[in-house]
Length: 170
Image (tube, rainbow, N blue to C red; front, side, top):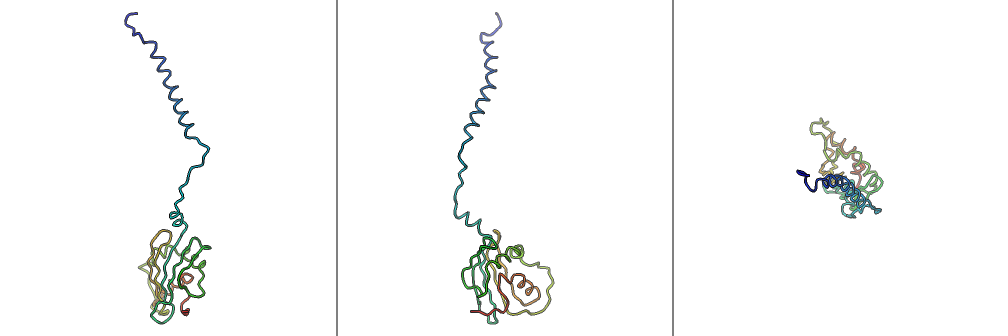
């Protein structure tokens, strides 16, 4: 058998084993990947608390004719039915209604009023409000007064959040 290599017959046998070996490795890897345990979820309390808050707003609102700020409070909304208030809101303040207004008017709170809108020149009262914080993870920095038709409209839209105009301070 001249010209033939002494291991010529062994090559076909080894190359036939290669696909079987690869299948065996794949099966072994699949078996290792399958477990009866549920995936472990990391409990990051801070991230959870942040996700639970849909809005956190600090409000400073003057509802009477004197120039002083009558009320300052923080509203925390997890949803429209789960709200907390810290500070000094008006006496008849309804946190759930305020959160419903935040949810309904979130784009307005975040983006502010249309800068090109036309406002009537009518005076609605001395009330002023500064609203700062976050809604849906977006920053809010909004100032509202009732010195023209646009401000009157803005206040009416957000009355559950700001309080009714002319409400006396306690």
